[in-house]
Image (cartoon, rainbow, N blue to C red; front, side, top):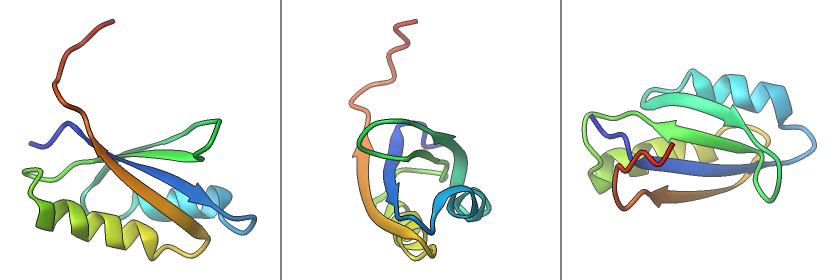
Length: 83
């Protein structure tokens, strides 16, 4: 299970709660967290693996949600738990 890929999402004035709920229902999305700062949401990609094809499908689906303006993907380099 892919545990290290995330999408950072910015949404416009018409995004908000609706965009977060819609993204949370997408196939391949494990968790959606609202955050402050440059991005509005952090989306945890929950696919069977982190192949470019699978992550790209989730990325495209998130970008297609009404109100979403910008999406950036990132992959954690390791699974270290520093807590």
